[in-house]
Amino acid sequence: MPGTGINPAVVGLVVVIALLIFTTFIVILSRYKKCPSDKVMVIYGKVGTNKDGTSRSAKCIHGGASFVWPVIQAYDYLDLTPISISVDLTNALSRQNIRVDVPSRFTVGISTEVGIMQNAAERLLGMKLIEIQELAKDIILGQLRLVIATMEIEEINSDRDKFLDAVSGNVETELKKIGLRLINVNVTDINDESGYIAALGKEAAAKAINDAKVSVAEADRNGAIGASIAQKEQRISVAKSDSEAIKGENEARVQIAESEAIRREREAEALKRATAAENIQAARALEESYAAQQAAETARAALEKAKLEADIIVKAEIAKKQKELEAEAEAEQLRRKARGEADAILMKMQAEAAGMREMLSKQAEGFTEIVNSAGGEANDAIRLMLADKMEELTRIQVDAIKNLKIDKVTVWDNGTSGENGKTSTANFVSGLMKSVPPLNEIFDMAGMQLPEYLGKKTDADEVGEQPKE
Image 1: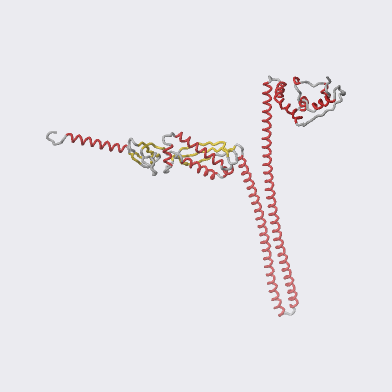
Image 2 (image 1 turned 30 degrees about the vertical axis):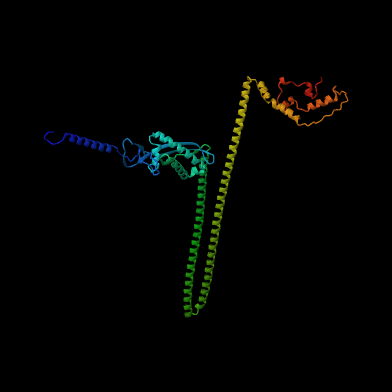
């Protein structure tokens, strides 16, 4: 403007530069993306190269932020929310060739581990949740069947920790290849179509009941032994107390006798007439001493007898209880063995009966179809079956004589006729042909009748003669 000294072109240029700088700053701020804690941000496009010089397919960021270059780069998110997958595995074949059903539920999610997260970006980015569930379910089903095929029913049913560890290890290894990680495995139940697991449960219950019975028997035995020991100790204590009481009484009597003897001695010194009485008292004291000793020996013998009786009774009770427990255990084993053999025989006979019933049913159905195809005529159906077997019947007739080795036949015929008007040569050939079982005789041996269109028996055939010409 005139008089101000400021060039308008310079002002305009400054304003434009300022606007460009501000716009660039806003664009830069808008392209700086922060990744939420429950997601993985995947930047794809021109993202650099790997250590081996190959181009990287994507850059994964979890719990941070990064600048996304416009035009050459773009970004998307992978959700880290856990995915629950219901896997109802049926008819899985175990190592014992027993088919089992293992309904279970697996919880998986996108892995945040370096390297595995890259697999998720390459294989799961852009897929819907239902598609990820189906993909993971197929992998889990295959690995679950593989683990079951390597284990026996007893291991799967009793050692659940080992089974879950094997499933977790195999499944997680395969899930890492597509960028997933296994969070939790929950096997709801294990069943088999043959009832083998139920039988194992019944066997375990029976074993627990038997163990409880043995424990009760052992407790009863211990109680009986304790009571016997208590009675023995009581008897010993009573006998010991009685012995001590008798001993005390004897000692008191001895002291009395000694005091009496001293008094008698002093009286004898004073009065000579008391000497005889003192001697008599001494003899009595000696007699009482002998009696006391005899009583003590009797008490000691009773004590020894009580000890021996207590030991014999306790040992007899223990042996009796032990024999009873052994007999019960042996009887239980025999019952279980007999029950198992009976169940095996029953299942075998049921299987054979089912197979025989199925075979006879199929034969009956086939014969019914033949009769139906013959217009409902049983005879026509039989003719149809015979026509099918005719070649075999003819072969049997031919086989009857085909192995006969006749190198040369010399016939001496004098030309005279026999009883039936035939020459000797004719009779020889006729007899040779009769050695082949006729077709109607084959039918007779099979309990069947030759159809009339194949010929009838003549009276001569029935009596075993050649009809005369």
